[in-house]
Structures are given as C-alpha cells and as structure tokens.
Length: 113
Image 1 (spheres, one colour):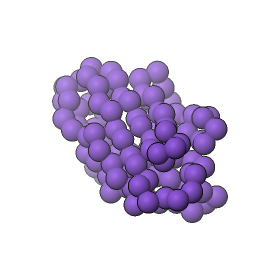
Image 2 (cartoon, rainbow, N blue to C red):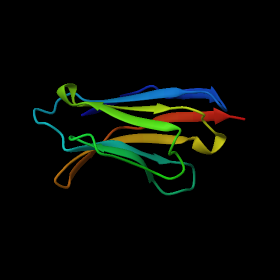
Image 3 (cartoon, one colour):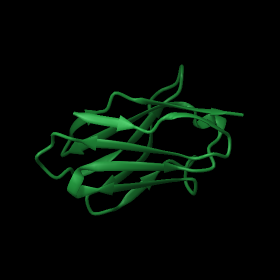
C-alpha cells in the first residue's frame, strides 16, 4: 500500500512537497518515483530514483523538481519548486521491484496563474 500526501493548490512560482510511503513493504524497493496525469492527457514520468540514488527527470521539470528517498522507511519525496500552471495534474507515486509495480492513489496538484 502506497500512501501519498502533500498535494494542494499553490500559486505559480510556489512550492510543494509530495511524500509517498510504502508502509507495508517488508523488502527494500529498487525503484521509486512519480508520474503525473493532466486531464485528457496520458500519464507521464516525472522523476524516479533507484535504491542506489540514481535519479531521472522529465525534461520539463529538470532544475525545478528534486526527488529523494529514505530507503529505511521506503518513502519517496518530490520537492517541487518554481511551479507552473502546466504542472497541474494528479501525481501518482509508484514502486517497482524487477517489474512488479505498485501505484499510489494519486494526489492533486493545482497551480494557479
């Protein structure tokens, strides 16, 4: 079970921090990350981080978003700065262990202009 928190409404230029805890996983999680889906659009990768700390970002968020994790707690974070209206979407966290993928329920992020 993935429990997300931290979404909300913010003005353009503001910041939000998303959290996602894999509260029942007894194992270390190899890959964790975030996707987002805006209305009428496909779900796209925002950022991911491996258990070794290797990160990957969508070009649209590079330099503005930072992904991090606490592997001991199986928790992943997404610090979002300099938010833009086009960042408005439902954000979904996920975990992946050798192709076995789980999703969070999604948290709404709305950026007003």
